[in-house]
Image (cartoon, rainbow, N blue to C red; front, side, top):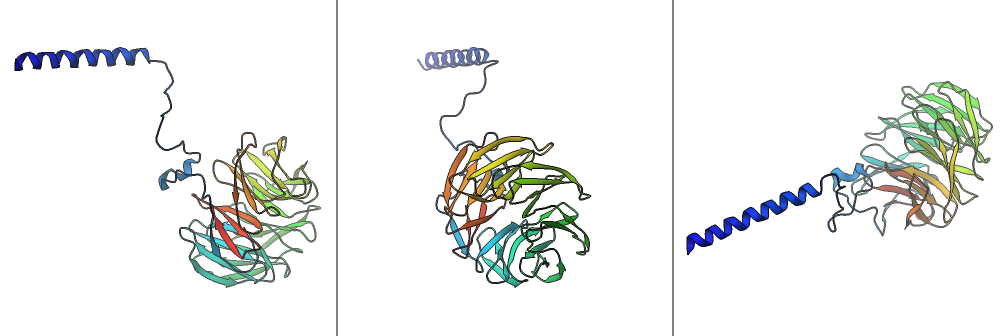
Length: 329
């Protein structure tokens, strides 16, 4: 009896294996089917190492900064905010928001950018830029620029400073702060680098593209009062504050690829490796847009006057000008 049971079991196993092989042969050439359960597809591959499967905090975590933070940047480890009303910058540890230091700078700091070793801060009322060592916040120098410097960019060698007050852009050598020239662009408020060109929003319904030499490589029409500007690896995005839209331009030639509505006037922009995020300063929210077609993927609350935005590899950080905080989404 036992031998018969073993024989039946063996026959059943052979039939099951044969059925499996036939089934697999029938599936040859068919696309794999999606799983019916488990973690949702990861939208941003940069987050995979952190096991961060969710898109953002539904309720943002906020951390205190100085008064009226505007510009915000990430240095690879920490987040920095330019605190306009307290003439300081705050350094927050990205993983938990711990304040690692508050450092004095010039009069009315508004923009910050990281050059790989140092933080550069534009001081709007004192018409200069302060260079701080990122490791400890030590001031390494203050360098004069044009009137009312705003949101700068780093091109790998130089710092480009848009001067909103006089419509110029100043080029500072990052190694020592030497002024390499000031170019009259007719308008400049925020800058972004696409790997080849410097892009400037002008707040005059256009953006300007400059070669590294500073010569003009094109002026392109966008919406009303363009402010924030960001590069997604192929295209340049512009926040049209008074049009309640963002414009997508092809970086190679400036062609308009689309203009997309936002639920309020967009202020700052950041690319997270997968999607575009726009802060809506007037309505107090942040909207996430799909780069391929500008579709609104999500809207998140961000307390009290969201302005600047930065990505730390896992989360988007937003400065809250009215709450004196930085929100981590």
